[in-house]
Length: 334
Image (cartoon, rainbow, N blue to C red; front, side, top):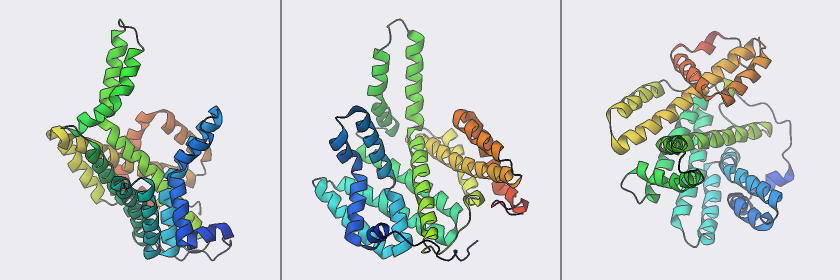
């Protein structure tokens, strides 16, 4: 549902307005956020606790860049956001000594993808935007791994990435601890099998949170136009379920890299469906003012990962039956 945003009630801070309306300062801010983990570590890395906090803050600033481009798109439009991205890309090209791989990765995942998703969110709603974001991140991660790979198989390459870590773990054990060594090797195999899917889901949570936060800021300051449905109304397109069934089927009948890709694609799609299931449960509990139960639900979800299967089932059923259609408003209104 599309509706007109509320009138402007909060003036935008001058500093925020300056960076969002000037191309070069905005591009400078982007580059500083992208490289913040490096230069903060250079400044504070020698101070034990402060150095750790600096790297953590730098990583969070890096992950917030897609939200900044979504915000620039919502406020300045497509042309302006691409111009900011272009200026930042040239700066990164100079800083990386002409590394085109870094620049293309930046333009694809940090600029074009969040800009495209912000446009889709405005015009087609949250469900379509969420699905396309996962698709873009999946292909982006797989492409980045393929370009970095020097192995015959993608799974072999990912396994090589984890090998030093797990070899150090095994080296710390006594030679007679056969069971512990076998468990560590099994863990390495499992992590290599699902690493791309887990990475995509992690990036999706970060990118999606950035974009939703950018929308909230744009609504707050009165420059957002388009769909303003609440997150609790998230409804994925029905074709996603058919794609999930096809991908799961391929994962069971194929071998090699095709099977590896379909297994991880299944993980990503199931994760999205689980998010819809969580929104259904949250909306149902909220409509009955069971706020404590909502807190318990998220705590259980955080500490007991197996419960995700239940939310996947709820999400799949909701795609078919739309449980929230006749539910009390998810905004809490009666």
